[in-house]
Image 1 (cartoon, rainbow, N blue to C red):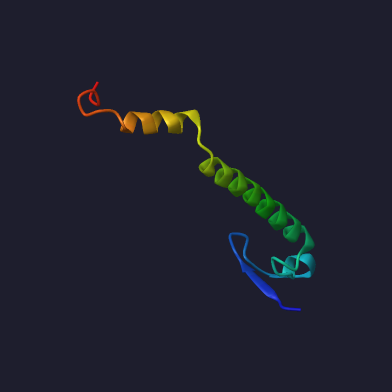
Image 2 (tube, rainbow, N blue to C red):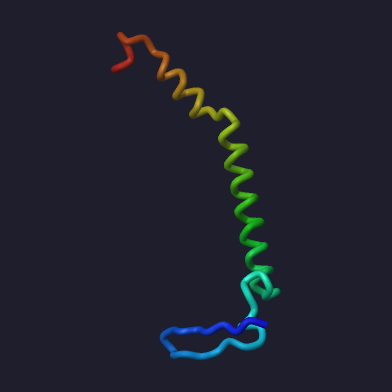
Length: 74
């Protein structure tokens, strides 16, 4: 088991037990990390679908871009 030295505002101490485990080895940290990654995956999936879908604003912008030069400044 590796020993982790923590140096911070409190002072120097040696981590033992659950605190000495690596990020992925600690079950509590592993759960938090997994939940955060699942949230990120859900968010990115929604963003990907949103980017692939045409919305009313996209149609409006495309129509605005195709206006004749004479009226494009109106």
